[in-house]
Image: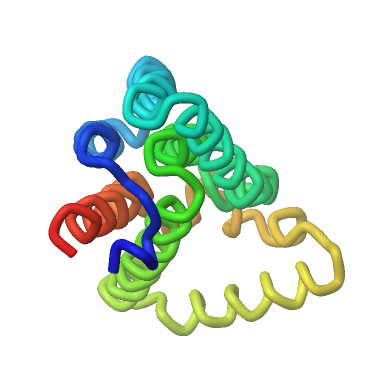
Length: 183
């Protein structure tokens, strides 16, 4: 499994799990992820990877943060994600490096989707959620912004069905950290 995830040393893995946990707790409580937490995690990603890998570790941290930005920033621009989620994923990318971060992303996407379906079912909005998902895909394939014509698709809308994405991110971070330590 470690060949699939890539090199993730114990120090960055533990820091990643700790930062993701703190972010999830604050995201649940206040629907915000503090900039101070994200900045500390981002800087510790560079420091920890430089400590364990020298110059290669610095490049790994930069590549992980860059990949996270390339994937998550468009979601923020489309109002599907908050800025705190983007910054948290960049910090986790700096800690994990690009290969391990990719698996954090996959695990976060799967756990977030499962939680979203559960929430939609619990609120009696599964049909509307599936219709909105199809609408989003059609709009994006036509190079149109989905949130412009349907306000409820914006993460900032009071009508939106929202989840604290920091929790899904923490699940992904913990999964990758544990797999990298015990696989």
